[in-house]
Length: 89
Image: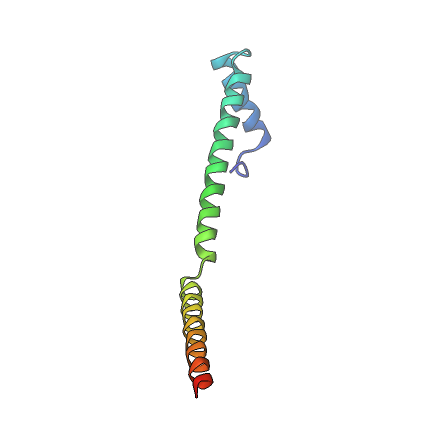
């Protein structure tokens, strides 16, 4: 962003700001700008984290694991039933 602005132009901009707002208002303006930038940065990080969380969750894996669990339960139940039938014979 500041790559196209030279040092002399930055000094000139600060001088104009000093003339417009005065020396006593510049620290409060700088603080409010810093708070705003921090809030924007935190908001973008939260958005990035939410996108990353959604990208990490693979719905096909969760569905596959649920089917696998159900199949294992059915196999266990079938083994229990067939075991009791074999004992009776």
